[in-house]
Length: 272
Ligand SMILES: C[S@@+](CC[C@H](N)C(=O)[O-])C[C@H]1O[C@@H](n2cnc3c(N)ncnc32)[C@H](O)[C@@H]1O
Image (cartoon, helix red, strand yellow):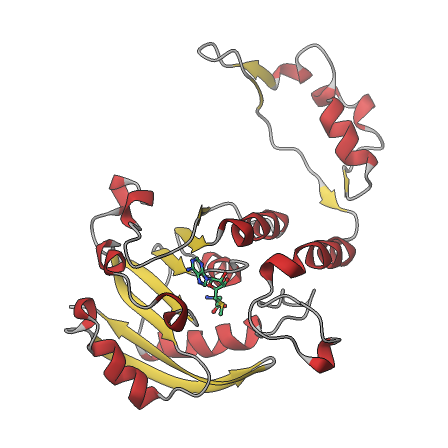
């Protein structure tokens, strides 16, 4: 209760009750039966849904963005953005970013439609997920769970942003990705079969290459985005030269620019 009072006193969150002090569900000794002790560990758990709301969502996200801009920034700065660091992925309706997440997602969805791919019930594997907003969009489209990999510093910020946005069905895996990274060890056994997931490989290939461990993840479709200066034709040739993509079928392609980023090729593939 002390922690909860501390959070409420900061003014970011509020409850629909005038004061939690007058609500039975927050009263001692056991919060109306909601406060239980786990016999095996002795840890107390509060188990009831309660209504909380963000007092000022726009202000909260501006503050988070200001706090996280140095960790979540990636690549060069932009004179017209004040010359300093800013978010790589925009938070739609709340903050700008180098990449326009809404625009990109609309283009990706058009490609999914061409390939008759629905994300509903599928697991998403996002390599170099940055803020995790592509996972957030996929979860909003009905994906079952999202896994995201990025550096420890970035993952700290993504976790805060995804939780503040209300996302819960995700696992973020911190650490430097290298050619030897074992991605599958983060995936629970029940998700390993059937290979039904969707791999997001967005603006990451020039940073990490194509580690063999990606092949062991249980994905069926791969959404690939290249970098500026690359073409659909060039990237298609490059992708099929990756050993674990040699039998993959290209289902849809697009090239577009978004936000402050020049045009990039995007390719949707299905593996054999
Ligand atoms: C260009 S951004 C792309 C972000 C996201 N995939 C997107 O397209 O919106 C590259 C991301 O990959 C991460 N990254 C680059 N190299 C990495 C490495 N070796 N290990 C872990 N993360 C890395 C960066 O921290 C950054 O968040």
